Amino acid sequence: MAVRRIIANLPATDPVRLARFYCDVFGLAIPLEMGWIAFLKGDARPEIELHTASEGGSGTAMPAISIAVDDLDAVETAARAAGAAPVYGPVTEPWGVRRFYLRDPEGNLINVLAHTDAHHEG
Image (cartoon, rainbow, N blue to C red; front, side):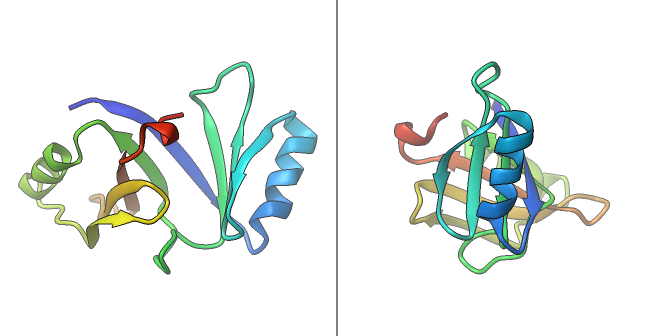
């Protein structure tokens, strides 16, 4: 099991507007936006992303962070062993990820995902 990346999600009532602010101030680009979420990337460090969103997707709550992994099943097994059963999923979403949510010991909602399409691998 290896963590592929950790993604911070910022709540926003207008994700595209907030994303444009980060573009204007920090020189980031918006490679993808779906209305409810906008992805931001920089040229110098493409592995670092900032997402703005009005929800977690599929009508779910906004997670505190998203962690992309290479083996979702192994992480789910480890999470269950640690007493953190999924509170959503695992489910394959229409935008090319398989994911589940769990709550960490502090109650933070964590989105754990694996890309189902190599095109989305970043």
